Image: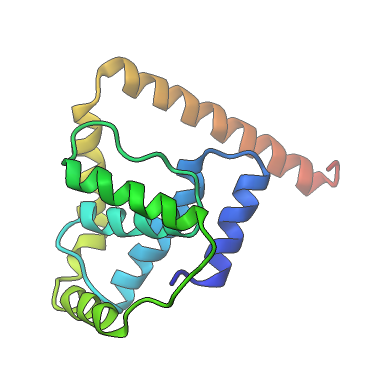
Length: 160
């Protein structure tokens, strides 16, 4: 179960009109922290991200299931997670299953959430995208940075 402050941050992002992937980012971030703290491990950065996205869907973030590049099994699981997030909370999860899952993750390594592994993952994912897409992302990031700086300056000066 995600921590209450993570759910609150995601809710705030939704109210501000931010995209579902931004809202889900809070859950992924929490998952990385769990791995670094030693709460459990993960086989790879992809698995850590997948766990975070699953928690986001189950918490009600309207993330669509992945379109391509993943198995039908993964898409079906994402769909089930989304359905669970849109329903009222029903019966409690099986304690045996929860402990088995946590136990399996505890046996995994903790380097999946290291800065170097996350950096490698980000670079490899970026390489798989086209140059046009990468350029578009870079321009959007630059625009966001500029907007953030100006709003921070305005707040600092007491204009906001």
